[in-house]
Length: 169
Image (cartoon, rainbow, N blue to C red; front, side, top):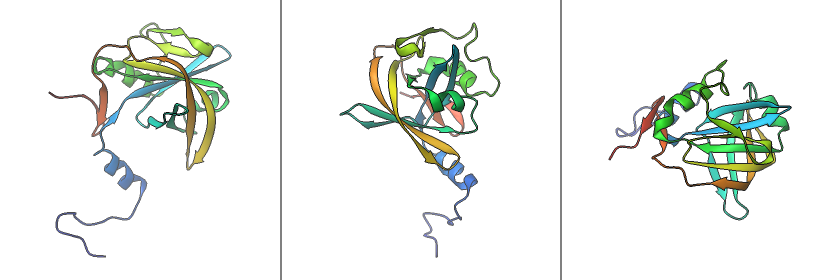
C-alpha cells in the first residue's frame, strides 16, 4: 500500500492509533449517572449519541473496568447530562478515578426513577436501559428517554485533543 502525499503514511490499527485519530474528533461532554442501593455513580462520557427519535434512544460506551460499571450493569434507569462550558471542573471530577463525584462540591438531587440528576447542566434525560451490547473491553448501553429537561442556559462543553474546550465565536 502506498500513501498519498496529502494523507501521510498509513499505520497499522492499534489502541494508540485509535486514540490518536479520535483526538482529532471534537465531541460533546456528558456525565452519565445511575444509582443502586443508595449508592450513586457517574462518569464523564464523550461517546454519547442520539440513536433514534422514535422511540427516543441514546447510546454511550462504558468500560467494564470502570468503577461505575457494576451499577450501570444492573441499573434499570440512567441519567444523561449535557455539560456546559462552565462545567469543566465537574467534567474533570467525574472523569478522575477515585474522586468524590457526589461530594459537597457537586450539585445534585435524586430525580425521576431514583436517578441522580446534576444541577446547572445544559440539558438532562432520565432513560430506561434497553440493552447492553458487548464491544471489546466496553459495553454500548442503549437507553430510551423517559423524561428530561432541555432548558439549561449556556454553551456546550467540548472535548478535543485531550482537553476540555469551549466553542469559539
